[in-house]
Length: 114
Image 1 (cartoon, rainbow, N blue to C red):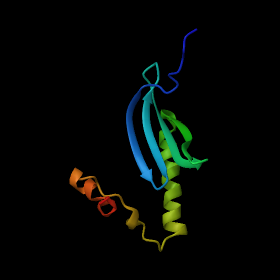
Image 2: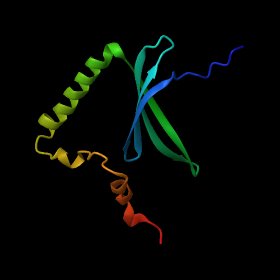
Image 3: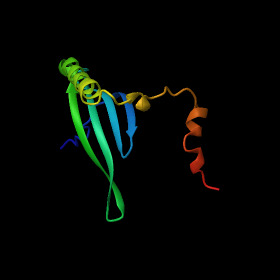
């Protein structure tokens, strides 16, 4: 019998977003018929009995739903920003583009061991 462990199709593109104890993965994958879809995975590190494990939740998003998904996500974010928290300064969370390895090395510089 054929061993079918290739549940996740070929990965074409991947983007990782670290967010505190969570990490989000945006992966573009291909089907056998060369069609494409997006998986969005939330991974959260947990502790159980002095061991770490990762709890994962995954959403499969197909091309025919891309526009509706992006529009609904933008509407929800805009509602929070403009209606529920209009006085809050969200710019503090803006991500600066990665300019060089030098800037990345500076992050956590004060946490180095002696």
